[in-house]
Length: 141
Image (cartoon, rainbow, N blue to C red; front, side):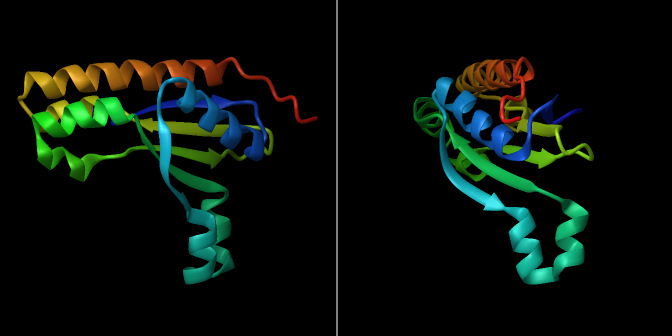
């Protein structure tokens, strides 16, 4: 089973991160956390480890309405929140990959119909955000 939805876009790193934030916002997601993996690796493991991973940020995206419904149905689901979205640099300097968690993974862990409904809606919103990104053109050049 695949656990992410992925799109690769012809965008610079900075543009891809910004547009991913905007696309998530348009679907009702806010960013609760941001982990700059490259900087963390460089600080803790050195430049070689940072260079091996490249530009890599994990955005912890949350749609409060959906999260509220999910937690009301099953409080333990908080361990799976927020929905992580990864923005990572491809080998090409003008190509970036965005991976979003597939919310259907929650359904694999729960039999609750309410959780299934939330996962379906979150899945549709994340897919729509990624679809908008796949149409993006690099305007930074």
